[in-house]
Image (cartoon, rainbow, N blue to C red):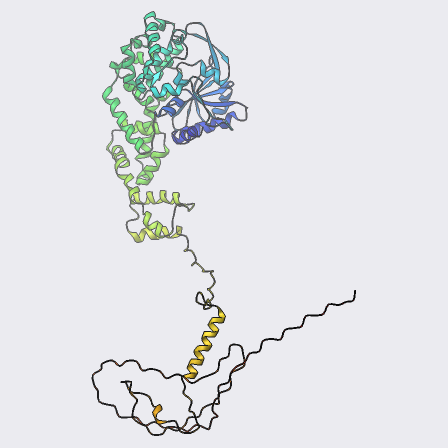
Length: 573
């Protein structure tokens, strides 16, 4: 289901999608159900280009005529099968028919009766055409394939739905050949055998006049009508349809030129149907009376009128294209895309003036190169990105400005784009808080008490490094610093005693330690250093310190806390 929704949205042209959307809106208030059927579903499934649309309504399709006339042109109708032939804007051909079943009291004489969509699919010609896609709300995109037509599409085969299909409706003999010429398919083995039998028995004689005219018009609507006619001629069917018409009566060189120019326009987005323009070419060598008799057989009378009106439309459009209003390339481009595609193709094919041909040459080769000069990088630098609502509209404006050579420099481009450039975004505000400084953590394996003890020991060691004299008086001369060699220096003059703050006794705490004299520090082994001249000794002024009592080491006695006596048990109750 999802796959066919994708195909409906991507494989159909915008004009074809508009036609289906309009029909959906028209049948909804009437309570009718709508289905895409026949060749359109076959081409969507098989990957072929979708040429025409076949739509089936569960109800009377003729009841939609008045509403459809407001949106499309009615080409013709067939009361027997309750069918309408419609052309929507853009040249989209749609055949709207009523769901029905068929019975054949006589070959070629069908009787139509209203039925459901599944019954309608089971009475069709070939299994590849017996498929439908729902266009209704709630089941949109649902595929119905009661006869397994998908398998025959994969095998590229035409298989009869009914064993008596060629006998009941001889038009299927012609349709099998025409579809084989267009698609390159072959008939399934049993279908081919029944085809040969019907051909030998002459069942084609039961073909009605309306069906004969319908099949002749379908040849004119083929993309390659010469190929279809040659295939029909090989089996002798063209003599049964129209003895005066055949591939030899066509202007094949002009027809090839028309197809080539149609392909060039399609590359620029102009999709035109060639049937009305090609018909004078495929009947170029026929007598006017023979052409007139052939056109009278066509069921779509508006198609005949369109063939006759081509020359008048070409003259009017040529005057518009060569006028002053269309002198600028952008103006001519807009006019070509806004006009009827078939009229554009007819002027390109039939217009012989140099001004017209130069316009079309520039339209196909020169003007499209302006798309390659669109300044995507400059637009990105100016913050003009696809998420802006006016982005695609701005691209179209730039395309036309570049086509007219109005923006030649980067400065001109920036000046043109400046009104569309959004303001720069504000600077990014950092809302993250500054990280708090982490406190120094104790090394692993050491507790806080151990650290405190280590700090206290370091402080005590530093205090012990200060040598205290045994008695109050001068500091002995031997306490002077040692020389580099590690030997004690010569005797110095007496040094005045420094003022030393009295050392308080350490507090009596469980961790307190008595201060003792520092052990003499052993001198490090002297390294071999070349002898140098002794520097003159500097005079040191010694200040006598006030008398200090000799520090006496005391033992710190820690008393264990007294244990509380256990409370006596009360004897009172």
